[in-house]
Length: 152
Image (cartoon, rainbow, N blue to C red):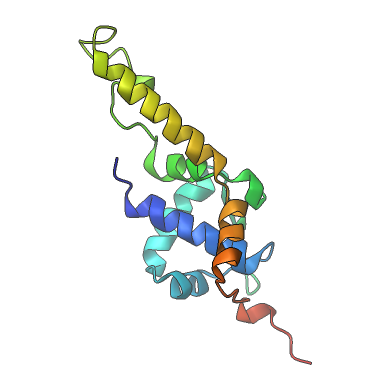
């Protein structure tokens, strides 16, 4: 299975929002700079994430993007499904099971079904909160959005 840049960049961008902005809206140019992802491509990815209820946007000078749910409620699986469509390793496992002429008589079908199940369990167990905890453990520096920095 090979994930596209949509899911890989989408997960990185969501981590960035959770890690750096928290509940505040994050501007796309800040996410783009920190994650080295084109702002135009991020806009495309964010449209799908908004459609799936993972991300929301706010217009205006204090606007930007923020998570539509708490970090512990957004799983890697949800992000992949929002960006890729599904997490099937092969078509004959899962939803499309019956479309194969060997359905029910193919010994390898069970391999694909079991690997798909295990992979989905893992993707479901990892959340944005998990990634934020890993970011802290790795010592990744948090960068607060410049719009919210106050000087005394």
